[in-house]
Image 1 (cartoon, rainbow, N blue to C red):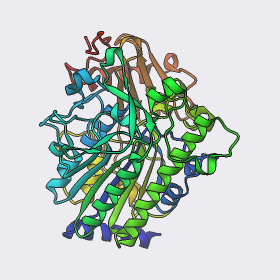
Image 2: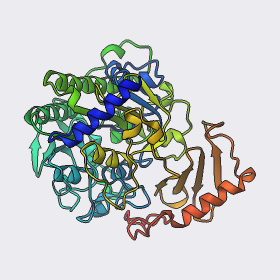
Image 3: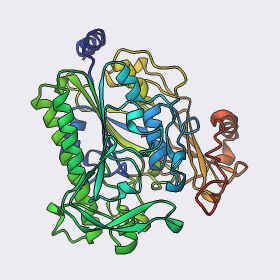
Length: 481
């Protein structure tokens, strides 16, 4: 064991010093819960390839998303700054889509890696800048962008078009347009009327071509699938937001149709993860590539998705869903695989979050971590040097739900979860995750010393953001007051 770790350290040093640092692949699922994978305890949905990835790499049990909904979580992933420091702190209506955009001042992990000599690509859902904003992927460090820019467009798995860089690629699918939000202020979704080409397949094909084309140079692939996010418009009108080409092995299960679809979507995603791993191996890139797998936030509620994720216990042993700051909304599956470097079958209880992937990428490519980030490299843990691993004293999240549903959350010392909902003066709930992982027993009254730490931290955790007032209710036009 000791010899193996010494060898791993030597190999990492050699890799960093060489002209060919490891390739990096980020695979991000959309609304996949902690408990949706076999390797995290799922018993009804098959995920053999992701389970294999965990068996061949390291699985984390205490890893957190950047936020409880799509855009702010992805902003944390891309910028290495927590939700109180980021540019994009919430999902925004289309009528004010400039709010949900990165700026020229933002440094993304893609820009950083491009500066380090990497070819860079995103395939899938971006959500951090539309075609006419400075947050467009091509302006944020990506050489190639394929898929969806807008989150409402991404609800459709059989869209009539997708973006390739700045051009629309027409597809033979047909949808019936559905305005979203008040008078369509959230944009236009769609209900499939003719399903011909499944967009996740196109995103995988584009990703495999990118890997092949850049096999002889370092590359960064951000595979941001839309699975298993629901088509919310179909869910609202038809009662089923799951869109998948075939129910496959779940067709004859004695389950509701929507739940069959949800399971089939996840198994479809699993097959795509397998395809990426297999292509890396066939090209001789297996031991030259670090692959990460996680999800942007917790599973969706039935009222928005049509399918019932409680049927599968998608949140695992934790309470809550997407939009919640209890662990069901933000604790994620997280797997890292690097054959020959990360020990097979490893399980880590290190407490990390999306922001840490920036510093991790920087160390893996042999560069210094930029100043001003809320990011700690996971490399010591990944390579078995846990004694060298630094830790966060605090992790921070916020959800801008408007009115009484906005909330802040803080994790103190990896143990104490504090949640404040509704206003800046609302009482703070406190949960001891060590003894109460499901967050059912509020112990704020008996731990004033922890509440004191939380209040002191909250007083400085959030930088002002004119576009994202935390506890302000949204106006009728979608703008926040």
